[in-house]
Length: 118
Length: 113
Image 1 (cartoon, one colour):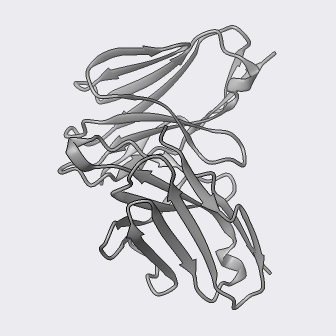
Image 2 (cartoon, rainbow over the protein chains, first blue to last red; image 1 turned 180 degrees about the horizontal axis):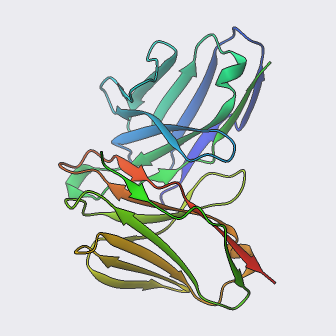
């Protein structure tokens, strides 16, 4: 149980284009999903928290207009990198958790999406 | 500022030995503690969680929690080369149940055949 998928796993795009990444919880309802970014040899950096049906909460220094997050259902959240530039190239990872019924904050991670902007 | 500290390593142990990974956290109000394993180029995967003081065992893994000392550890018995990875300690952010976790920088474990 607790399987999270991400699509696509790899994206190569030209500078200036927008890229959408999907995160799905396959066998549980995710009240909350998180989006992280990880550069080589560095730790996870939390970008934003999204709760189903409400606006995402962005971490300090993360541009909300550049990284658009939608969490329209209990099983799907999307991250759109708008007008991507080479410095946005990174490993983007989502995680999901179910906080209903007093559940603890166990986060289950998707396999990640590698974005390369040329 | 809420922090989770880990020794970045690398921690090198011979195959078959016990690997001991340590983590300290700053917020006394934290109640939930997690260990994740991350292989190079992959995303983190949950190994164990622990909520109560003491030990929790799952196969070759034992998590230990000492809230008074604000210390959580992970022991890996009979270490295998396949255990070579970065181990992330994560702690919840009180108050409330927001789901957010603070992650440590991770400890790189190398198990030598």
